[in-house]
Image (cartoon, rainbow, N blue to C red; front, side):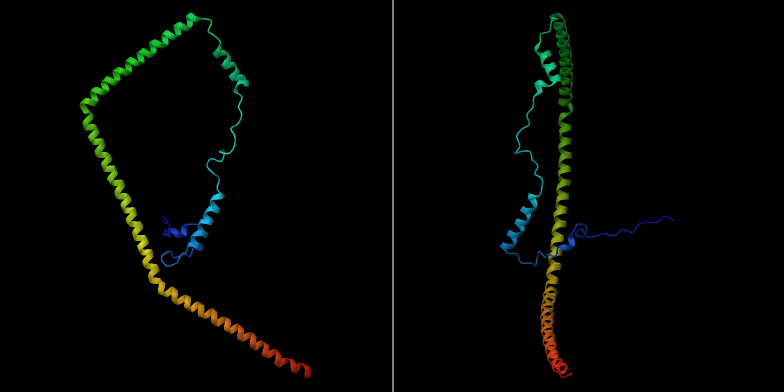
Length: 208
């Protein structure tokens, strides 16, 4: 019996490292110029830790001495010397020129054939090519539009969720503040009661 794995769709947020540390609500939180300043400072600090792309820009070019290398020295020496066998060189040059002429002739023949084919079939070929490009462009534009619509829908959904939760968040914040206040009051009361208990215990200990 074949066992199939159960697949679960996880939110993109949970796939990002340390995403649990982010608790911002962009559609509800109020940001000030100081917040932007702190954020920019953090970004600049992080960017300074990156290795620059052109990290050798400030360094001088390395010194090279190709002339002293044996291989290059031999190459330059041979290049500067005249060929003693001029006849052989002229023969080789003639063969090379003949080979180039044949290649040029073949190239011109092929070029003429291509021009004839282009004259006969070129217009239709370009029309089909332009039609294919238009079709491809429309597909790209449709894909971009779909992504934009999806992005807009996600942002609208996030905004609606945050606005719907705003009342509950404010209520919980008020409740939290009251609990903290009550906890502090109980702490003060406990310290006061502890002091009174100590005062009551002290005379009893003295009598004993």
